[in-house]
Amino acid sequence: MFDFISLHQGEEKRESVLENIKQSISFRGSNLWILACAIVIASVGLNVNSTAVVIGAMLISPLMGPIVGAGFALAVFDFELLKRCGKNLLIATIVSLVVSAIYFFISPFKDAQPELLARTSPTIYDVLIAFFGGLVGVIALTRVEKGNPIPGVAIATALMPPLCTAGYGLAMGNYSYFFGAFYLYSINCFFICIATYFIVRYLKYTPVQFKNIRFEKQIRYGISFLLLLMIVPSFYLAYNLLKEKQFNDNVSKFIENEFTANGYTIIFKEIKYNTSPKKIELAFLSKRFSNEEEKQLNHRLNQYQIFNTSLIFKQGTQDLKKEILNELGTQNKALSEKDIIINNLQNEIKEFKFDDTETYKEIGILFPEAKNVSIGKFLLFPNSDSAKIETVVLFHHQEKEEIDTLKLKKWLIQKLSTNNIKLVELDKN
Image (cartoon, rainbow, N blue to C red; front, side):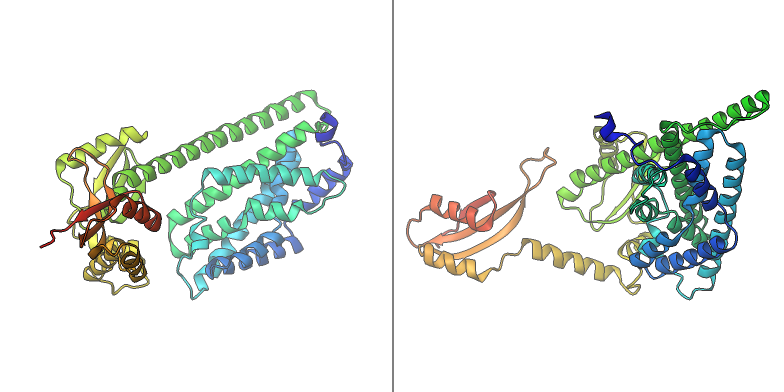
């Protein structure tokens, strides 16, 4: 079993692996030109929202070299290699930021596209992708047959798009984009480096030996401290991102159960996780909450494991219209409040109106005893204390003669695919 999963099978000569890593970390001459071209291609892809172009840029990017080299240097206590990797990674990062910032500054298209916005803040999934992508990358580098994983790792770890997004933030003066994207890039670098360290240690590469024993100890202690400095904050970061993901999931569940399920139309939503206390800001199309209702809903947050959070309703504020329009998008800037109300009313009519003429014809054939038939959907409030509202299908009819109501109800349940059906007989007069 251990032979079956062993990474020593098909392993490249360690001298060759080290030589390949040293060659891939340099950013001079052709490598620098390739990096600059890849940055321009990725920037164009983000600018025109083309996933295919962004993937193409990832494939030709040489950014993985110094990051993997740094992880290798940490594992074998090679201080000189670590300095070279750090220096070249810094050069590559600065060149990437400058090139992308220049492109976005001169580009006539300034709007932030979805491909670009997706790289403005990290998630727990980015941590997992970077770590396992780094594992695949270093495993492939230590094989005799490199195979197909390397291009896949270049795509998965996604180092180029965050750097280009950071360049966009610099060009536009949007520092929230810059810091968010650069934060994502740093996370990718850290976890690729850590994944490389673990694999090299697992393969038991021979540490670098120094003639001066005292100097060797100093180097080892220094690199061990640096590694600890990287690992502890990185895992703390991963934990925080996981907590943020859980928080957002709980908020989504709270909004769904307390508002959406009750038929309230949300026109503005903003979740602020990094404030103290955290904030959930909501605005509704027509519903207005009293102070007592607002207190009850804030208290109910604890039931959804949402702690240290303030629920804020935007009601009747002067800038509410602006927030509504921003939420609906900037494509139709001429949209007015009247248009919003009409659009929502039309959607509500479609939801509750029943005008399927074929069904009415079938009723006339199968149940000729019923006349003046009408079908509609209504909201049913079981009692004043219940927070759950049910949608019920009402079947109104007059009877020419006695009708088999059990058969009629079973047929309606089958036909309309709902068990919530109520039959209402109208006055024969």
